[in-house]
Image 1 (cartoon, rainbow, N blue to C red):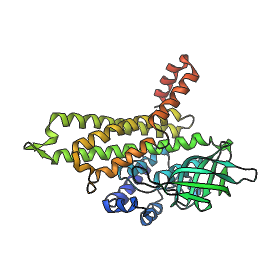
Image 2 (spheres, rainbow, N blue to C red; image 1 turned 90 degrees about the horizontal axis):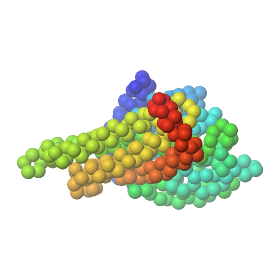
Image 3 (cartoon, one colour; image 1 turned 135 degrees about the horizontal axis):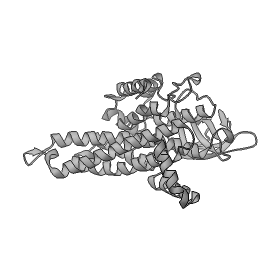
Length: 348
């Protein structure tokens, strides 16, 4: 890890370790945006970590910023932190300065008219109503930064993690910035950045679920000994530990591919697939080890696992990204399959 990465890791743990209590998460899940926590996160410079220093960011690489994303997943942070990191990176890479305030990222498409105004409905926007700005792809292959206040209609929704996933409808809104298609690849870049941050959050959440399961297996006594001494439980925990390590490595490879430039789509898609699959095992093993207590409102486990469940499907499910990889391989033809795999393995 670089010096900046270590600094960010320390900052994330200092901010969230102990602060993400059941009471804080419950308050967030009932619709109370954690404004004080967001101000602390913003004061630490985490949302714009990937933005250029000239734009007020830290100028970090994706590899440097991984502790932010892993920590956001590990602590089930109920803020648009991962989305802001991705949005700041997209804007900065396209030559647009990210604004201050809470920025979120939408997977929908906006249409730009001849006057440069944007229209369209963005569904399932993370913390859409409580954010200040939203970044979305445009139909012509560019990006638009729009103030949430410019939405003419909003709808409040929550995902299975009980985090806000709102609908924002724009009709002839004046964007704060428009990035032309020549400076980015629009929807593809949004989905890629969104998949990257969700994969990292999944990896962080999986690690947390593993740690909680191991701890509980050492504490819970059944038949006069901790359940962690039973071979069947040990085998499940070992399998999850392997999957958690694979998930962590997958996001590190994807971050390195993004930092290297060029086509990082294969690495990011692979990371989202690996992390989504590992999340399924984490959900099963963690709750099997904990038994019924893990589902109770008093226990912290389900605050992590419910979000893991939601993140698996956001910005492309494992099936979505597997289909993308399959179509890309089919388009390039069978003769290119092995050389492509070897080349990508070498880069990894």
